[in-house]
Image (tube, rainbow over the protein chains, first blue to last red):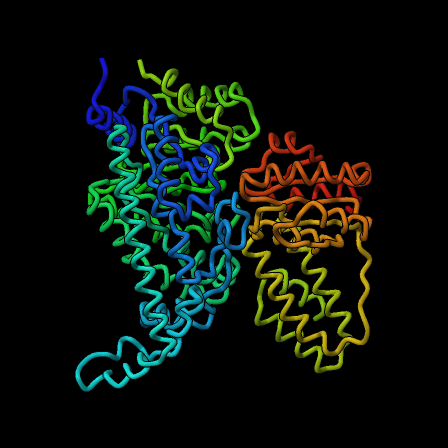
Amino acid sequence: MERTPEELYQEREKRVMDAIQLKVPDRVPVMALFGFFPAKYIGITCEEAMYDHEKMMKAWVKTMADFQPDMYENPYPVRFLGNILEVLDYRALKWPGHGLDTMLTYQFVEDEYMKAEEYDEFLFDLSDYMVRKLWPRLFGALEPFKKIRPINQLISYYMGLANLALFDLPEITSALNALSKAGREAQKMLSGAQAFSEEMKRLGIPPQFGAFTQAPFDTISDFFRGTRGTMLDMYRNPDKLQEATEKLLPIMLEMGVSSAKRRGIPRVFIPLHKGLDNFMSLDQFKTFYWPTLRKLMVGLIEEGLVPCPFFEGDCTSRLEMIADIPKGKACYAFERTNIFKAKEILGDHVCIRGNVPLSLLCGGTPDDVKEYCKKLIDKVGKGGGFILDAATGLDDAKPENVKMMIEFTKEYGVYR
Amino acid sequence: MEGDLVNILADLKEKEALKIVEERLSAGEDPLKILGEGRRAMEIVGRRFEAKEYFIPDLVYSGEILKEIAKKVKPKLKGDAQVKRLGKIVIGTVAGDIHDIGKNIVTFMLDICGFEVYDLGVDVPAKKFIEKIGETKAEVIGLSGFLTVAFNSMKETVEAIKEAHLRDNVRIMIGGGQIDDEVRKYTGADAYGPDAMAAVSLARRWLGGK
């Protein structure tokens, strides 16, 4: 019997939540982070996807309709950014048509946007530091903000009003105009996101995530100090680095909680970058990385939400440590971690998601993919608590391989 | 006293190491001798990394301390200090990919292990690899990539090297991100390495060295 989209939606939502709560669902749920795959699949450029609402909408809706994953990822907040980035002259990213070929995915430009000697300013007043120091480095259009006086001095009629005289400078006016123009573009992006989620409701597909946040250490390493910067800070400024992660913790928590609650979707995506086996020792992970990540996840759980960290790279040596989390309340996705070992160590505690290698999805045959999925379903899927996914974003995967991954899981992954 | 600097640097004691260097330089010691000890310390760091006692942050920090030492020593150097190198390696992140954290670590490890490394940077077209192979006569090529787009770029680079009739002169290793042995087969490279030490082992196997 044909199910209505609402029934399909509920069925899929239950399947995934059963897996997360370590119950045995009707079958193994299957989904993916599609990345820019839909653009390539439909035949538009990545540049068009980032700038052209209609083309992006059409490409992504058709891809979801054709592939029917159990859940979707809304492409707007992370892809439809071309105009916003351009208005702000964002320097920490190269994107298609803007420093990169139009068929390439955007890529991050890492740097020490915050200097090692600026930790005290960061810790004293983060917002003021960001507006007057970090933003001018990150956004070309906001560079004039480096001239303004501390924003925390505008307190009363006789404290701070004189500081406003600087806002009369033409370059500050143009920076403020850029912000308001970026605001209009951000509004279009949000309307696009809303329209996309309506389309998905019509297909009966729920969203994977209601919010996005990051481990505090990653936020510092990715966007403030750079990978090399934080590595050196672990030796030269260990106390300040730790204080900085603690300072970011409530901000990262609020970012997850407010958006997930507003949208009524409990799952919070937390992609993890710099705590991998190769990027720090287990001791350093224990000291600098895990404490605030754990507090973040427990904080989300206490708010009734589901932390969904994505352990990029290989984190096999961390499995025992990351097992310390309330049972049946989180979902851990793995890229190159030994997922079979993860099942042994975490299986009765945390739902596991992963990890069909992209080398197979891009270079292999549908039969190779099928064989790997079978192994995953047999071993990691045993007894529930498993979501099948590619190891990371699909981007250049072959459509026939993605199709095999999803359809084979739907057929073979049924629990009897 | 002289063994101290080697061990103190290998133990990553930055302040102590810099203090010793300053004292010895102001006592009029041969700056080349200090650099030689720095190199010996880096060999110990490399061995500890190989033994998994040290991790990438330790490597990065050791390199940083060495840089600080070199800053103090260089003004006192007369002429260039030539060191015998084990063999030449051309390395780069392939076309379409601008990620360099992994590549930089591999370059650093190959360098401290005694190889002459020509690092072409990121988003390197096949043509640039071929030019550099021609110019340096390097026998080992390292192709790095983080994104899936790198799979095809690597394949195209290997093919271009073949078309330039250089394929028989070089061994090609690949690594980074999602790269694995499946990708090696796809690209036609000679070997895949999961980390920086694998790159060093491959280079040693192909070029000699301990």
